[in-house]
Length: 165
Image (cartoon, rainbow, N blue to C red; front, top):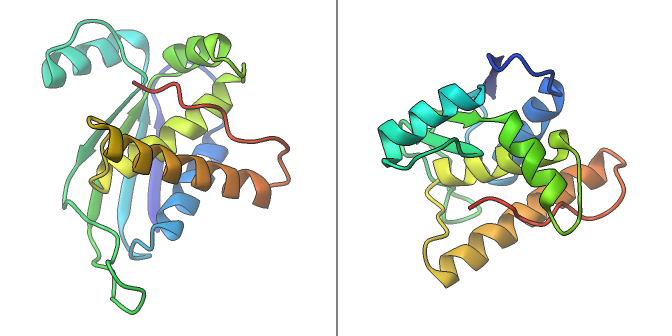
């Protein structure tokens, strides 16, 4: 799995954890091991510009995903996953920090960025949360992936409650 993490935000983040949880999520979703992903960490000004440009919504947001080859997890266990460029995930640590502090189960900025990374991966793989059934499926997968990764890394407690919009 080729995953690049590029921090352009000026905020110190746990880049290794972002890389590790992205790799874990892609493996768990059975994405081809030669697929490529880019994660970019930006400040609020850059995120706001992207949010306006691509979503026509004001203000910065927490995470945005820009799919490339529209890869999907294999439908069957014996099916060979396709290889390709997954796309880009853009994270904003300042928004993540605020969301972590305001969440019912308060958590750190880095924990929120881990959650947002998984959220972004799932969006790249075609998952969405616009309707209740899709939201339940996506957020259920998100929690299972975050909890599985945290368990493998000896981190205690359940994953942070979803704070992404």
